[in-house]
Each structure stands twice: as structure tokens, then as C-alpha cells.
Image (cartoon, rainbow, N blue to C red; front, side):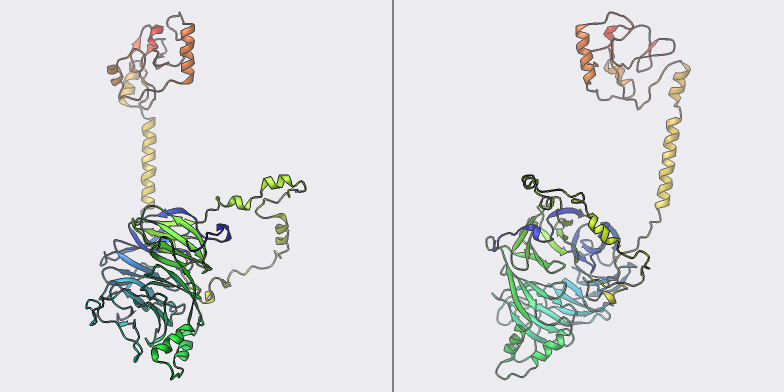
Length: 571
């Protein structure tokens, strides 16, 4: 690798597969902003909403008009809506709380990736990246679309690529899929084209305001922002993941960039001006690659806090994840099942990673605390050598007594405010998101009481049947015979033939002789019994009735028996 593996205890990141989720054939996943709900698009056109705390299905969204596989799912800002794109060229907006379909838009091309405007609480605008055309902005209210420019001419602001099915006049190959994404507040669109450039486009005026050339001029396959909007990640065809630092302010970035672009500078052409402005927008920070195997990367992304970068191997039949810190060191290589990986997402708040395999399973990767527990435990060999060491009584307690004393200093008579919502430091705008949907309400199933009644009824019938005598037992009781229960584990033994055993109601497996039986067999060989009518030791399936007559297991009354009736096989 391009960097040595560092100590894994220096940070929180997943290490092992904790469990997996299975519901149909899942193809893509996405967390909501809080990480409490997980949306998964399936191959049958449905969307499944998982409650990530309980790992259960909270809602299933299904449209009869859509049976094509889902290619991407995206949450709205407050988590009330989910946008799903499918291979039938459709975009469907769902209301999560009610499970109703809000709108459905059909495009001219199949959408590989779609995302909602991050600055709007009520989604009305989305960015779609089709399979074989330039990215487009789609108005979900009226279905209108605007094609974004993917290249810049020296005379104009920007120009859209011609129709992908036609080759260019210069004989160049057809259009290559382009990656695009919004910035944190949605006023700018960062677009990676097939020329190895990052174009920064104003989302309102659809004007290119900056161009950032990528080293190597390779096709950009993925472009992702960190959750706080401070870093940008690109994945190119040259097998390199690059991380850029965002130099623009998080709020008002469009106005700041427009001011820099409109500055008069007669010494530069328009392209040079845009590249000059690009140097003030993004700064290349790190590059990640496998210098040995030179593998292609798939679905790279940041961790929730932006401190880690993860990328999956694009090799067929490999479910391998690579984790780096932002300084460029390789931290961990995670190897999963022999199934190709098609999707990846990092939990917004916890050190958890969720991956989707080609088999349709969702694997949850978590930190292995048991494996790393030895690092936190004291070195007992070193403690034994140190004679001055004295173990404290609360040394291994989860909460030492000293901290418990500090807690007692709190005024317990003070009234607790349960109405005011405190601002979460993990979210910069949590004070304005009181209406955010964090969990889905649990609705009881209507047929649960009926199922309980059926179970209770069947159990009562079973209990009655256990206490009710069968016609065979009544008849046997009248004849003075004893009938063993049908569930009795006793077997037909002695001198009985296979035909006699078959007459007892069914064949059963022969029991293995116990240790006590083996001792009795050895004792019998040393000191045989000479008494008739009595067994030397052990249990038999032959019993006596009240008259003292011996009863076979099949209910036959015998007059007398000898020691030979007990076979060695039984003992």
C-alpha cells in the first residue's frame, strides 16, 4: 500500500460484520440525517425503511406502476420524504409517514443517482445523473428539467453535451456518465466530467463559475461531499481517490464565487479566469490508492465526522473495504463474504458502515470491542513486578466512586425543563429542525388478536386431548390390561421379534446402553442370578399388574419368565 497500517485503536471505525439485514433483493441504501432510519431500494421496485435501532422493517413503500430495480434512494432534509430512482427512467417521491406516493416523474434516460436539494425542507428540486446524458435539474412539481453544462467554451458560460446516442463530429466516443452533487446548502453544484475537470455551477442561474482540473485528466466517476461540507471527495478512472478541502464559506458560497468570477482581468481568457477562480475554491489535500494492485474503487465516502475515508474494491467477487484517515494512512482492510459489493454508506453519528452485496444482503460492520478489550486492561505481568502497585477498590468500575461524588453536587430539587429542545452540536441547524422525522410510529397489526385466539384455542384443545382417554385405553382398562402412552420412550425388548415390535404402533430407534447398564452387564458375568421370576438389576419394559402377572409392552399378560428374558442387548 501507499502507507503503513497504523494502530487501529487510535480511532473509532468498524472492524467486523456485526449482523446482516435481509428483505428481498436490496440494491442501494441511504441513511437519514440522524442515522435512525435506513432506506433500501429493492430489485422489485419497492423501497424498504428499516428502523436501524431495532433492525426491523418499519415501512415498505411499493408502487404497482414500478416493478423495475431501484438504482438510488435519497432522504429529504427533515426525513419526511424519500426520492427513489429506477431503471424504468422514473423518479418517485414518497411520504414516509403516510406511505403515499407524492409524485412520479419519467425522464428520457435511466437515472443512476438522484439527490434532493439539501437546503429545502419541502422537496421540489432534485439533481439526477442519467446513464448516458448530462446531469439535469428536475422540478418535481411540474416535471420540467434543465440540462447542466458539462464543459466550458472560451466564449460562452457553458455548453451542454449533445445527445449521447450520436457520436461527436470529431469522432470521439459517446458520452460518459457524469457525477454531480450539491454542496451543503444547495446553492452550488459540483460536477465532474469526462475530461477530468470539476465544474462548479450556480444552481439558480445554471452558470459555470469555476473549473478545477484533476491531475491525470481522468473521467470522474464519483463526487461526494463530507457531512459538514468542508471536504470533497472524487473517484476517477485512474484508480485514485482524491480529497479536496473546500475553501469557500459554507453559507453564501454562490455569491462569493460570483464575485470572484466577475472581477475584471483582461490578461486572462474566460477558461483561465474560471481555473483561477477554481484555485480559490478547492485545494487538493490527499490522494488514496493501492499502488501494488492498482484496483478500481467503488462507492467511496466520508465518515460521519469527516475524519475517515472509506472505499470499496470494484473487483468481481470481492467484498473488501479500505479505510484511511484524512492524513493519508491506511488504517484497516475489511474483508467480507465472497460477494461483490454494489453499495456503501457510513452511519452519520456512529462508527458503523453498511454495505450491500450483489446477492441483495445488507451487512452491518461495527467495531469489535471484545478484540480490543485487552488494550484497555492493565498489564498484569508489569503490575506483579511493580511491588508498589495497590489496586483501588473502584479501579475496574464503569463509574468510579470519585465521579459518583461529583454527581451528588447537582441540585436535585431544581425543576427539569422537558420542553426546551437543546441544540445538538452534531447538527449546525438542529434548532430549526424540530419537525424532523427521527422514528416511525409503531402501528399494531390488525390480525394479531385473531392469531392469539387461534393459538390459545389450539393449546386448550391439545390440553384436553392429553387428559381424554382414547377408545383403545378404555377397552384395555375393561380387560384389566395396562397400555403405555403413545409418546412413551420405552422400547420392545427381550425375546420379542421385529413383527412384535411392529405391532406396538411404530418402530423407534434403539437406545444406546448407559454406563450403569454396562456395569450391570459386567456384574452379571461375574455373579449370575439363580432366582426365577425376578430380575437381577436394571429396568425393563415388562411390568406387573395388580394380580402380580407380568405384562409385556404390547399389553400381553405372561405367566412366568426367567432370567433369559433379559437380553444382553438391552443391558
